[in-house]
Length: 462
Image (cartoon, rainbow, N blue to C red; front, side, top):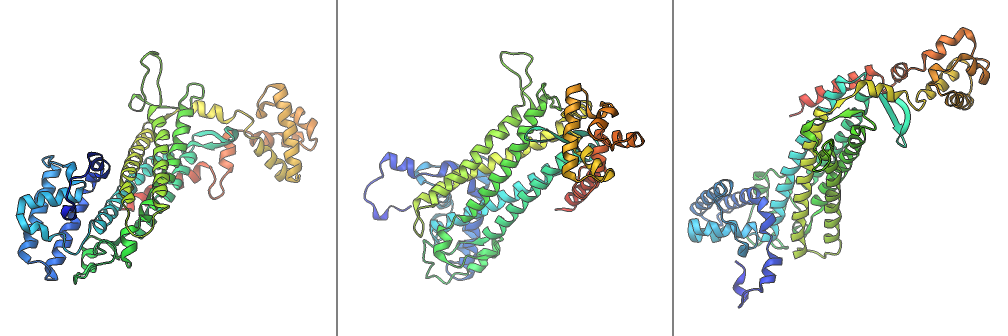
């Protein structure tokens, strides 16, 4: 396809390093769509005949059908998806196939195809994130009042509700969707017609091909059009952040499902056993989501290293833009499917969550708040008093709500018999979570409202 200048075949190792068909075959739909748009534009502008354009379109449709039916023979000797499609087109329609490449280069062709592929991938990821959010919001609605321990430093901190915890990941996923949406807006410009780097002398209509392919506009600079891979970097950055969010939740699932913790259980659908230890139930799906994050973050770093030293315009280094991105986006899609499945599958142990929520003197802050409200102590003083009361409870080996009133009064005499009931009333985990009714708090009524709001919002989205 490019051998007119050359008198000898490339060394076999050159063919191996130069070929990209093993991974850029994923772009076949986008390549065919862009070629059809280009041929239609060439015909409208009188650059090729309407008959040639008709033959080209028919031939491209045939190739699309062959690929999708598994009947297409990809040839490494033809290097990439573009040459494989064009080579087969020549076999199907003869010389007219050679006119398809008028006024374009593989440089603008691959940039167009890759943008189209990434755009389609973003749409798929967005739908998967919405499904993940829906699963989380449904589980949160069902467990709006299920009390569990909230942690800082992985130590019991304050009681929260399971629904509230799950809704935190809904919020993270929404920001992930926003990053993908922003990336989609910026990538939605067409490189087609930029040629190898300098544009073309043919009177083409780049606006026509951009519109046909769903782009907002043509790219304004031909050098930028063929050399830019910002769109892939930005998308991979969004992938990496989303994967990190999934990994955080996956880590919690691993911890929670351990019998030593026992907050949730996963069914056979999302666990595996051991080849040696028959009792084992391993949270392998969560562990693999956690691990795939490394591949996704690595793809972002790898592409940054490819691009960091490239002068304008196109360099063959840019062939390395697709393999990592395709793998990373595929890994994220798999991770989202697995996490969505685990959210739907997980069964919280409500009694164990309730028990754990009260461990570690997690309602101590509620006592400090009560001292501030009722006894009008400065919060710092209330904090100190509460700390001494907790120390007495630890010494006695009892939870705060079982500590004798006299022990509290020994620390703070203002805690009188008249307000005994009020003191102990704030020390239950249920009262604790119910009291957190400010906007964004963990109170069950808040969680129910937020879960319903999210489910309504997600239902309204296309």
